[in-house]
Image 1: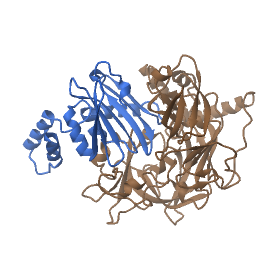
Image 2: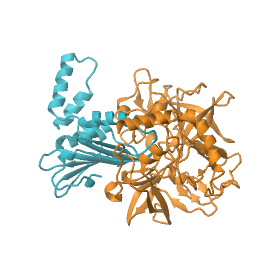
Image 3: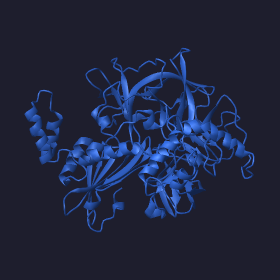
Image 4: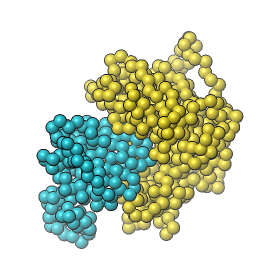
Amino acid sequence: MNELQIFQCHGGATKLVLRAAILSATMLVFALPSFAGLGEDASSVQADQAHMQGNLRTTQAQAYTVQEIQAPTGIIVREYVSPTTGKVFGVAWQGPWPPDMRQTLGNYFGQYQQALQAQANSHAGRRPLVIQQPGLILQASGHLRSFAGRAYIPEMLPQGVSAEVIR
Amino acid sequence: MKSERVNLTDLNRIMGVAACGALLFAVACGGSSGSTPTPTPTPTGSNVQAITVDAGPAGNYANGAFTSVTVCVPGTSTCQTIDGVLVDTGSLGLRLLSSVLTVPLPQQKASDGNPVVECLPFVSFYIWGPVQTADIEIAGEKASATPIQVISGSDFPVPTACADFGTSGETLSDLGANGILGVGSFPQDCGSACTTTGPSNPNLYYECPTSGCVVVAESLTQQVQNPVVLFSTDNNGVIIELPAASSPEATLSGSLIFGIGTQSNNGLNGATVYSVDNYGNFITTYQKTAYNQSFIDSGSNGLYFLDSSTTGIPVCSDANYFYCPSATQNLSATNEGSTGSPSGTVSFSVANADNLFNNNPSANVFGQLAGPNSLSGFDWGLPFFYGRKVFTAIYGQSTPGGTGPYWAY
């Protein structure tokens, strides 16, 4: 619940807060994962669930745990958690709309945005998205009313687990 | 490798200037080409709109089908014809760059009088901008007082929930087009989800008072509409017809035909009908594995399918979104209706994308351009339409081939 409270607190920050208060809030964000998603602790999944107002279902595979959040919008986000590090090493999404990518990718959202902007300058034309960078692999595809994607951190894949399971 | 890509882009940029020469060249060559199949007669009629695959208004598009659309202030003769609009069966509704729009279209307002603005996600960008109303005229068809989206990053501040999709597509260079004509499988871009309030609303429509934009419930008729359903006739779907393109070409001319089985020129004539599920997908089977999130999409610019580890085809070293086999691969897959039947084999070829671009600097039509699509099976983009007549029937509309949605070819 800690994460959730901080998330709400952060969301409720008003124009009245002083610079110092913003600073300390920022420090809190760094100290605890209020923004959840890729690369964060498994406990951050609760913040994602709260953000999506969805139902959470946990399934246990041999070498990882899948936390599946189903939102009332029909969007499904699956977060893949390593039992050894306790961190989310991959996320996958599917549904009529893409999920909140900032929430889903967490600290990797900035890298995602930069990669998108870089791709916009390459060959013109619409196609599935492929981002392959040190520390981040992301693939996305679909059309209006049907989107799917996945992102993972190759270095964080548990031993013996293929990236193919993230979908 | 990087400098090569810059050169390629530069070549593409000057293609607009070179297009005239390229056309003359194509005409000169056409006479001596013995292998060109006899062209089917160009369909004519009030429901036929010419489309062209070329470099598009940004001068650098590969495999984009463009057309022109006339928009009018509703009920008036104040009209403007905008060319370079991408014909897209993978989206729904007309979206036009505000920078090309000169007629004063009325702003749609929410019940409290605030302007309605939309955030529409695509795979690698979102489009933000106001919903306005236009009479849309294409060929001899007219969709009166139709909600469209004006693509404008700056008229209204982008709400956080919209920006959180990633990056904005809002310029000619972002889109490679002056607009997008979405004529896919559904009547509206969102559907019933956007009519709700609370957590089931996907946050696409906003009302924007000066204090900031907030999500608004948007009725089906107020949503941005696939204009085809608002035509008085020929409103149950579209056909895209393009000639075959066995080698790279500068341009390809074809037709966007409105209606299915409503006129003498738009009958199914034995085309196989493949049902489409509620998400707009069907099944493609490749090497005995069925991929049930596959789709046909004139707005995708290649044949995108599976990945290197499944197909054994390497991606290009300088562009990991295209395949670069050492020799052209001739492959086949089986398309099936979303219910599992009928089924039909599709043969297709995958050429080396680097070679396609580098060896054909003035070409914009690449029937063998392909790349990976790791997650949803097959994305049959525009090359699938070359040499075919592809029918897209709209959800809930009745046709001689049954009620939409379906694809037929």
